[in-house]
Image 1 (cartoon, helix red, strand yellow):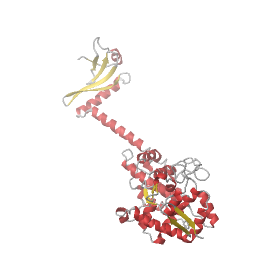
Image 2 (cartoon, helix red, strand yellow):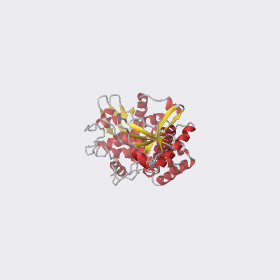
Image 3 (cartoon, rainbow, N blue to C red):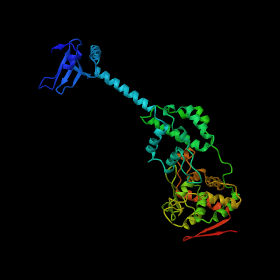
Image 4 (cartoon, one colour):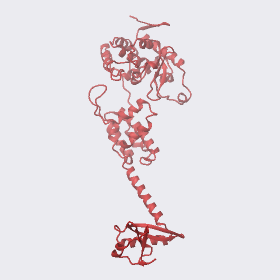
Length: 432
């Protein structure tokens, strides 16, 4: 093949012969450098040599973008690599892979908690209970919407103030500072938010896209433990034994029978307020005296339906699927019984007790009949607190029913309410 010294004029004059798809002209100065001209007139610098006994051809670039001197330098560089036994194509692929990896790492480092949080929720939505999923939404909500209970607008959840933090910046000091800021005004919800964040961090380290951005044990650091709000028990948010007569008298006088039954159900079962409000008629079995509760932790749990509570439920109107229905609520079920409960407490001259305090009252009153702690915990939906309870003891419904009937009877006796059951109906009379 004839070689010519490349000049701008000569390269511009290179043409492909008629009837050929392409023609290559070789530079007389630089070994391996050529200009490939196609029949359509496209011209590109190429480099050709032999490596390990095989011909290797590499496209350098378009002649319009590569000056002759730059193309000759590139050809000389490629020749040096080949003389060293290095394939320039593999080197270029490695460099590209390194560049892409660096770019990916740079993009990973820009991911914030708020970016990954929706993916975390979506990945677990099918396995979480509805209430657990809602906790994640509420605590990460930016706020601003009208409250469903009470007046005013919702404030941003505790997780909002950390949502703009990059995962790679989620250090123990950053978490501790967040805990200190949020726990100043709302320690309980901040503690719950931390537990959710802790589970999120564990998930992030299991996902390849985020693995390694946050140290797996960052939440275990001493500075974090010191900033974590300590559990606080509400003093006095519990009915005493001697207060039962006044409370029942006031609760049973509430004009709305649904609210009246709902409040008594909370006290007599120790269920969470949301669990009891979500009770459907399909969850009530009057024949075998059981309630299927939508447990916020385990999904569902079955507890006994004691006789007096069964009589209250049997007398409620069946407007829709909900046991505690409300004709004015959008979803058809009771949503705000607090005002009626507060009014009843005031009328009875009793100190304030929250709806959750009724749940706490049930657990406390169970001790009066020496109910085993594991039984009250199973009825209330508490997690087992001991190894034997966790792995070996799941009591059958009839055993729970024996104790549940006992505590209900004791509570009614303390409240001066006499209740008689018959096979076909329930009779109720107050003892004066």
